[in-house]
Amino acid sequence: MPVENLFSDLPTQPLPAELVDLLASQAGVRIKRIVSTGQASPDDFWYDQDEHEWVTVLQGAARLCFDDGEVLEMRVGDHLVINAHRKHRVDWTTPEEVTVWLAVFYPA
Amino acid sequence: MPVENLFSDLPTQPLPAELVDLLASQAGVRIKRIVSTGQASPDDFWYDQDEHEWVTVLQGAARLCFDDGEVLEMRVGDHLVINAHRKHRVDWTTPEEVTVWLAVFYPA
Image (tube, rainbow over all chains, first blue to last red; front, side, top):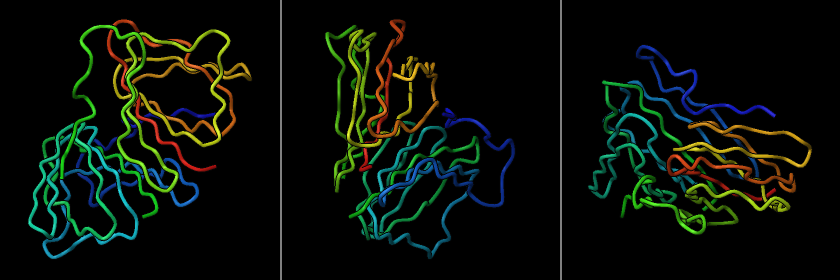
């Protein structure tokens, strides 16, 4: 049984897109590591998901925006549930270091 | 919408038992923070769970044992899926610092 590490295989320079690794998937539940190297969502893009998402930042820093105007600065260890269909976007991830997100998607 | 932090409210001295916080719960999925201050499972105790568990160590260090004889040293960021009914126990958590586990339980 392999044990892997959430901080392994991180990029050493900016990538053209986020890096997504599926860590576990079963019965509508998906656990993903998402690695950002300064990426943000396009200005006019909103995630509008059918599933709930619990998300945390394990390394780096980020800022989430919601279409109700809320803005969340995310530091290491900060976590929240984004309810299904709560529109949101990644407004910013730090260019200073690699940002490692852990996200759990589960049925609404 | 509250944002909380996985590393907040950690004990500053050993506790008599592990500290468990339910971070999210929906549709058979439970996300928990488990804080150990040197605890281990009793010698003859095995977890035998109906659900799959994805688990990682976010701070500290631990050792898992399985009834098939496998022993896993868990360092920060190490993660694995423990399949439902794979019997396991926490053989050791470091007494040197607080160990923070993140566990996602989901239907088998």
